[in-house]
Length: 418
Image 1: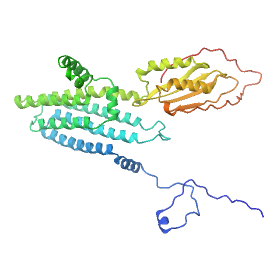
Image 2: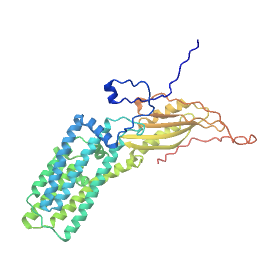
Image 3: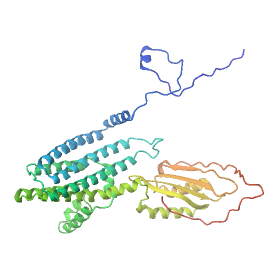
Image 4: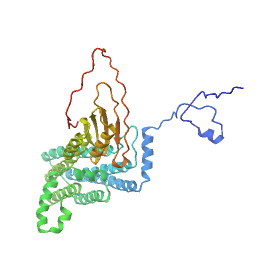
């Protein structure tokens, strides 16, 4: 008697079991539905779910506490700005709003560290930190422009400033600002401070610090090489507000308030511009200027390897803070060993480029070689690359026209980062 196996009518990769059926103990093995759940998670649902996961981290809890404290302090300081009618204190309160944004960036950095690369974000989520720092610095500069515009209007019609809460608001705002800077470890902003160029305020203070350290060498650890720009701008704003308080309280010189606001706006813009410029270049996928010479040297050394003819479409860019990515195509001779060339080129570049993609193709006019590719995450994750064998080349030209001979070409090296 012949037997046969009957194939199922419906095949599915996901089976949905309702909660009621699970409670009642119904049999759900009869029909397999080929579709996933109709209730797809919304953007708000995904955000709440990720936020709930983030709250379990001890570092995130600390950041949230400082975030709430800084947010309440900003609201209090803005209320005091309204009661004192001081434009300089309003400019100082904008600095606390920037602290709130920097704490949100710090919270984002903690979330990024816990994420893994996905199909949509193959390089990971670290680029979100760059975008967050760029947004914070640009918003701070926009706030400085707003303060500058309002202060110029106040120069024409100086308002009556009440000094009752001006001194208290200055001391309280400085305390909150310094607490956020030194009590919370902000990985993204700390890297930008170290990597970006100095602001004009830092350069002037550094010159004065060098002169002071010649008489007091013990202050060199505190004042050199560069003071933190955020603490520097906090002290600069406080000094401007203190001068304004004494001028108004003793001489009724109300025009000092808009001048102090202008000085705070200029200091804010001068401090934030180098950071926004540094992060903007990363977002534009430019090659770091300090790494161009090393890349040039490494590629020239790799071009002298046996079988390498030239490099094409080389592109190296900063993926995130401290991470360099790149891709390059290598044209080799038809008798060259693709695996050997691929390994040599990778060993030359992996010390500089963490996310590296290399494509090897043979210089062959009669047979089209497949494009073997290899992507290495880091030197510790190196695996032996695989190169596929070339497939036969089928031409649509008449048989009476033979393929053109390949001319002897010298190794060419081009470094034109996009």
